[in-house]
Image 1: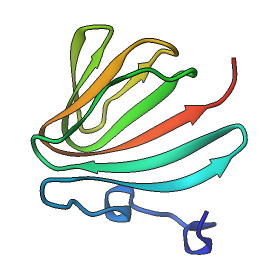
Image 2: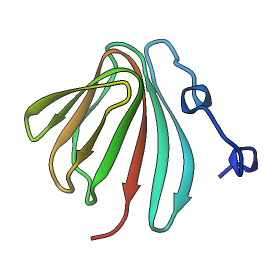
Image 3: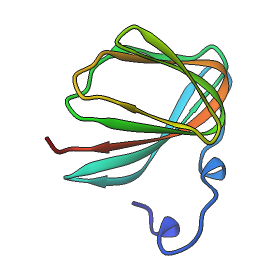
Length: 108
């Protein structure tokens, strides 16, 4: 974690910028027990279907995301969160530009 992020209030949306036709990420915390990463998705961008061995929580902090979990489409808006269960296939799509915080806890 960068020293400039420690011990002060931060506005999540300001920690990462959108880039045209891209998905951008910035890791905020990396520990053996888990990570916190901020993502910015340009409209039309996404992450293809995949699985993870641990539960992950997505908090949308700007815009609207389509998050598909085990084939079920979910629309997640600014201020909302969704938990993606361990070992369940999931994909993320930007129906409009959005930013999110991904929290992954590495524990069974």
